[in-house]
Image 1 (cartoon, rainbow, N blue to C red):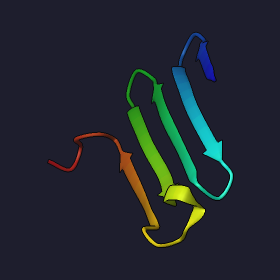
Image 2: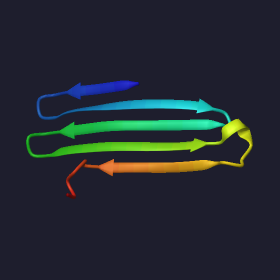
Image 3: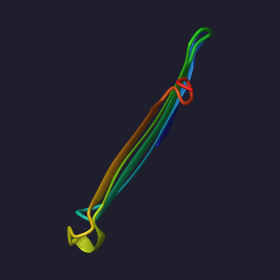
Image 4: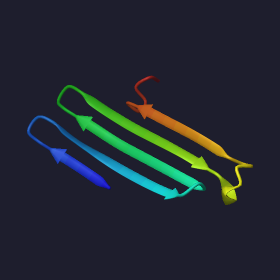
Length: 73
């Protein structure tokens, strides 16, 4: 899913992806940006879990959030 806006003083967009296999795999990804003359913001977020063959023997989960891309470098 994707959404965007562009008005006189600001513009931005948001992209989202999501997949889900019940009790086996799930992944979600969100990308977003917002800009004005003085401010620029960026967000990337990913969340997932994996459970091969629904066995709960090799279960893994994770999350990654990146705000303002490389502003901290």
